Image (cartoon, rainbow, N blue to C red; front, side, top):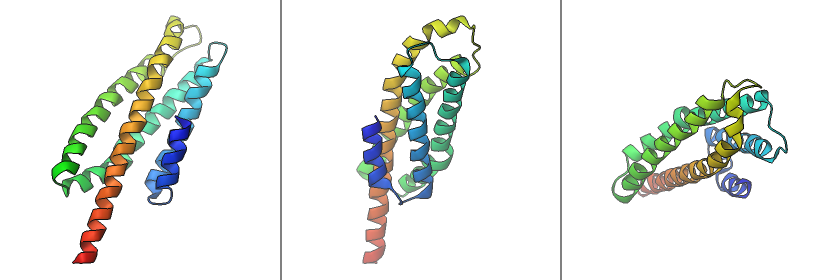
Length: 158
């Protein structure tokens, strides 16, 4: 996932400050996730809560800072591009629900909470969810870049 993130950052770097900040937040989230999964011992509650807070911050940034740009661009789109957006956004929304279920289960956890016994299993489920989310978001941003390029091209021709 880190390799794909680096590729995405190289492709999108400097094009939009909100996207740059969002990708930086993605890197932080991913690093925290990796730290939780690589720990030989059960992570402490504060590390889990910290990850959950970064998860909420990342998802919120996407919904409130990035997606509105995408939706505005899609409102001007038609045909295949609009169809693509209509397929991606519901999948991201479904993914959000699943990610928030993890947050709800572990965001306020205590050191002696019995649900920590299921953490390993839930982290194993969370990895593919994060990977899917990043892939869908990258597709969404790629469509946005395409729409920007098309609108600039149309403006130049006018």
